[in-house]
Image (cartoon, rainbow, N blue to C red; front, side):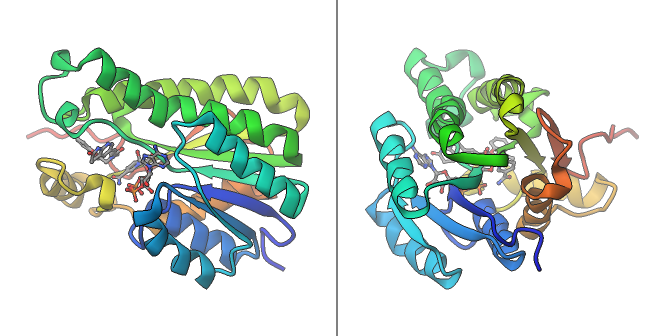
Length: 256
Ligand code: NAD
Ligand code: 0WE
């Protein structure tokens, strides 16, 4: 019997085998969960479908989380297939590439709104659709980063969006607690993924972790996945509205 045996849920945010969402999905499946997956577009479907099939996925559906209609269609299909669900993984973020390198004060109104919409509001829209289908003991997990609470160079508008995301976690947890639904974030340290590729100086951020983090290394997708299993399983039944750190560097001050 796995920790997730008898539980069914949906994963938003697999792009490829490097994705944090994929690390989470593998650990959930290993503990017996039954999984559904979404992918952003047809280009990514080619990558996501074989991965999802390798974990015996019941459903593999398109979903741009900027669209309420697409989110609603996903949960309609999930309701038809399963009737109810036990968990949701939200591992989606996007900002304009230029907004992650130009000075933060140059962020445009449109760039700000888009980062907020895709990276923070989407959790609210997904939770609204998921909650009516959720069984008692339901659990929702999203992914955040240190830049939500500290000014990390170049993270910029994504930091503002992650701050909103972490706040949304607290408001959703407060609202849904009476239905037995928990909502938490995992704040993960830097990991080399598609969303991290092309970020200026990402190597330097990894090197900082290797040099100064307590474990003298970065965390892995599997380690984030194991924390997600804890929060999504009954092991986490008393934990909600929390930001759980899987980031060995969070509390270290570097000095001479
Ligand atoms: P990734 O590129 O593998 O995943 C990001 C996902 O977001 C992709 O699957 C992409 O298709 C999806 N996405 C973007 N726009 C979308 C839209 N409009 N609709 C639907 N999906 C959309 O990268 P990742 O690093 O695994 O990122 C997953 C989550 O982890 C993100 O929330 C990210 O902020 C967070 N995170 C990443 C790191 C890191 O260092 N890699 C650290 C902490 C937190
Ligand atoms: O949340 C993230 C990255 C999110 C992200 C990445 C991209 C790159 C491609 C959002 N939007 C885009 N848009 C693109 O066009 N992380 C936690 C990884 C990350 O990104 C950083 C980091 C870290 C860590 C950006 C600057 C500084 C540190």
